[in-house]
Image (cartoon, rainbow, N blue to C red):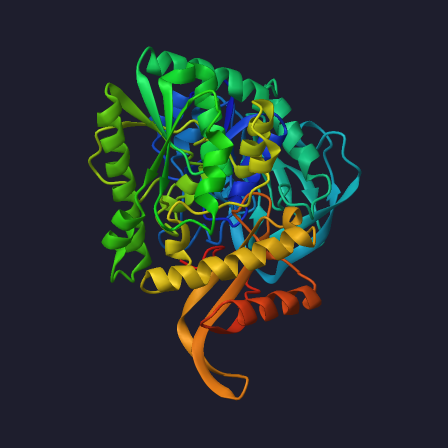
Length: 510
């Protein structure tokens, strides 16, 4: 869906790039991330109201340093360079960037020399978050200094063409007045700040009606937040032209299939249940590689939906609950950033499909999806559910997928989730689940030696799934959960808790 107002973030590999786009959206303006090398013709077609150059780990003087097309500065919109983005601006406009004897990471205090434009209405001295080695030592022609620190004499710059650069990161919480700086840039860009869940719903409903017309549409419905919000959104647009298909792949959590069916049996769209467990598990027999698992599941999903479409007749479109983080992690849209994994809704799709995709949530982060869901009346019991991967338990069983291994994981996972809910911390956690590891360990049960499976527990806190911290669950509760799993799930004699954050780890194990 084309936005009337948009600020583009060009990514140079920063760990904070997604956060920049999120902050701009929080200020009421749609923002999208593009690779630093996005062709100028593509940017011209978007007609952005402003462009932000992200930070990044590179040096502008390094071999193959990421640099944008210099013509971005001639598009007639303001440009803001953050950290490495500042250095890119300085380098391209003839300034000088040098490696510092003393690098600057973490909190710093900057003195503001020029309170106009970008730094308007800020205190004379503000706390900021620095993360840089190189720094600007000589101003480009026609630029002036806006702020400095003892370690960075040039911490913010501007010229009279609406080009700005700051050495610190306004998008992180450690820069308390960072949102004020981004709000100033939005004001300079002339944006009206009208982007909101309500506006998104209205525009998307109109776009779906225009696209679909009188045709019938099929929706891949899992019962999770994403696919459910997508179904409700499309249902609002076209009503009973929409048929939602829920497929039991055999890879769902314990008792999930009847639970999901109960959610939608009386919905305002048509609902179909397909039991395809035997079919999926047959295709996955003997498969160990996680990418191969995803590809098989993605292809089999599409084949099931194509078959259902043929039975219903006259269906040309398939709705999926793809989100913006799915797209980011599945393709190298972030310039130098590598693809982390193919997502079931993106990289796992076959090259040839008989249905055209409709992905109404493709531009949204997870929390934005939940707000849209609230706007269109999705039940809270669904909106509060933790994310569940498209491939289901296939990527939570490391190694071969068998009915016996599935049964072990389903039981352990159910105990974990039920205990989090019973202890009223489920809603404080972004995502929690169990993983069955492909190892066995020695144990003692009663007077006998055992050699059985290991279950890993994973729980994280996050805002959007792009970054995450491991959840601090009380030790006594973890001990209780582990004790229940070992005692109640036959075949498990050891439980471990994953305390890795993202990055460097991902949330899921595969």
